[in-house]
Length: 475
Image (cartoon, rainbow, N blue to C red; front, side):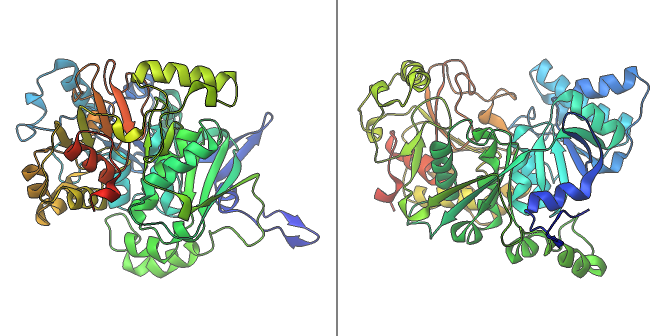
């Protein structure tokens, strides 16, 4: 039931509208039982299926669940299938996902399925994520598909088990945060730069307990792929989810895709979707404003996503910290990253470049990197893993693979790959890697690996110069 004030319906945020439609029951302590429209699993949460077997339970709505192989599948030598995966532990994880999907009757997008790709990329490509839905997955970056006006968030294995068994989840209602990006993006600035600037401004815990709605002219002007990049890194501020209100850009992207409403129901669906954006005057628990014109190409210097600075900046000094806690973070980051305070970021040399992950491996990302690489050659080892098999096919049809190969990049298959390395793709221990992934934590990309987050264009610039480079000097 809509809340009222003074006899009239109170203006509501998009989150409130979606939440109200999905609450089944409430209990003391502030938790609500919410209905889950769609749920995704990859190879990791096999414990959830083991738990169902032990309790002799079935999946309540198997066709609302989707198993997608992405974290453990190899990024090369795939035609021979799962049996040819050399590492027995990795092979067992991929086989286990296929067996669980088969045993419990849920749809599977397996390693060599033409639709295979990173879960959050595929969910968008196939229109599995739609405005007004609540979707969950065994991955914190599920919030990527919040770009469609979907309340999407990651859950753990025990929660996955509950969703599989009941198609619902006990969940504490989050607060709301609106981030408004005013103005237009300057030359050379991408959605990755915008979200890194926001994370740097808000901080690692600035969104804790909140669902973020991204708004403002700069966000409205973004493509769906750019909006997904923004929403993807919401979790890096501690937020439960990130969302963008649906609009004509959203509808044009979804129309005609595999799981989109059929032609007979399309207009009805769009009419409902148009009711979802936040009402004028809706109140958010917190507001943050960002000036797009002030954003420059960004890169991280330390080992937290909030350690993001314009490429024109210098490595900070511990004395620059605002408090003792931040000073400790700075000191630890400088030691791990082996950087000297005060050195220009453009003097930081790199050993390797990775373009991929659920953050930045869509077609537009690869096209942006290829534009920088044309006529140039990488001076460090570099690799591309497209976000999905469809992205790879489209890139090859456009000749982007030839540009990457001519520049000396490895052209791989779709997987989570070097973002987290669970399939065996790792930089060498101690290497400094520029990566388009969402996280730069210590040892995430491998033992002692020093990760610098950047946009695809900035990663390409680093590959051809061997150092952190302002892409605007190359284009």
